[in-house]
Image (cartoon, rainbow, N blue to C red; front, top):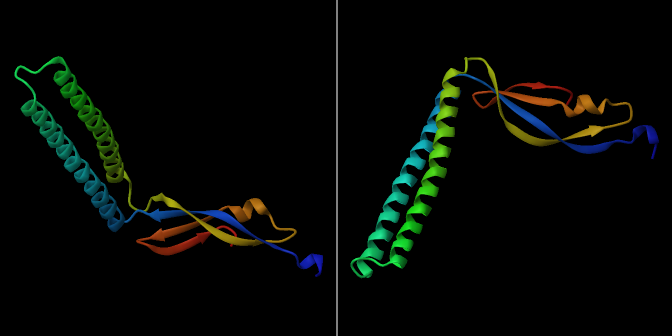
Length: 149
């Protein structure tokens, strides 16, 4: 094998960017709103489950409830409140993202994720340049490939 013909096949991260279009904005807003609605539904479920558990304990205990029963009820309430707090934090982040999507200008470019791709490198290639590749999408269709393929 001739040394001048040697090459390697390497993996590189490929950044995916999207051009902001009316369709992109609408889809992003719908997706975020759907996630917000899911969190609202989970919040209601946890609240109802917590109330059911508490009323079940109260039904099964003596009246007035003893210190152990009160501790059980307090523990359930603490767990419900912790979960609600986590969900409310997630909802808050989603609401902020929704606001950001609404403020993005049409034709701006936004990061859409990353994938891995293979590329050939041979002696004399500029590895740094070959590592810097982006794909630009417009409504899901490749509009441009930037960098050395």
